[in-house]
Image 1: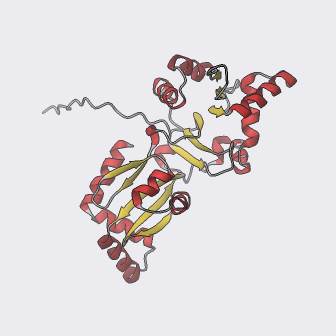
Image 2: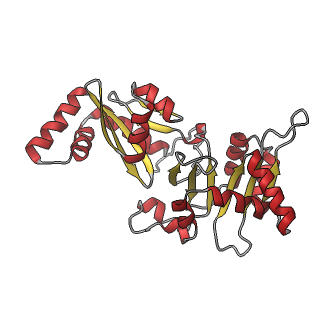
Image 3: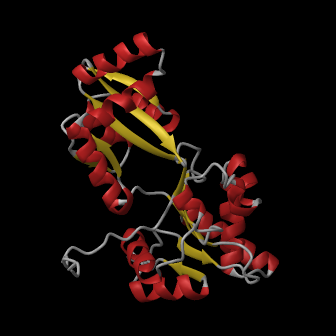
Length: 282
């Protein structure tokens, strides 16, 4: 018998990034989230989402992602209130495509560099942007594929090969919100540290430490667990009953608490349903 595949009207969600490194707590203006992709670029989806995120006309964004260059935000009431959006494509095709934004002060500095050193605006913008970044990130950007050890990366990420593009983002847009699996299996999205903290009834400092460092945090008898996978936080909240089961496993089997929570989570049908939905959405 032939197997008939059921059609679905639900469009597949665009996946823009499979490597994310957070430098958002570094001093401004070098505070960015490094969002990279090893798979081939889906140019229409990439352009659409960046256009929406940065208020750049879609046609202009598509051109920028195709040829490189800059988009200077228009004056409002005769005053420049935003700087520019830039896309840099290596002329030798040796490095990944890169996009970033400059604020008004950085834009003014880039224009000065352009005039004084006869550089293109996009190259001047990169120089100004680069020098504000944290030293750790500057060092990684001088290495191929951010210096990542592909032997330790998730196979699905590593099989894509070299990084194709990097977006240095300063926002947590709706297109890559954090997902948290709740005790009843629900998947709840939050778009930033403050929203995450509010959801779980914890302080911003607690949320920030958990998201950046991983580990566990007790909340009203329950526990939040965060594991950092390929630089991205994977978060689950466990009920008081499951937390107690995990602590029993720590005592009886000598497991690490994170391993015990994973074992308990995989044995919980509700949480497994949430995990399956998260996998399908990825």
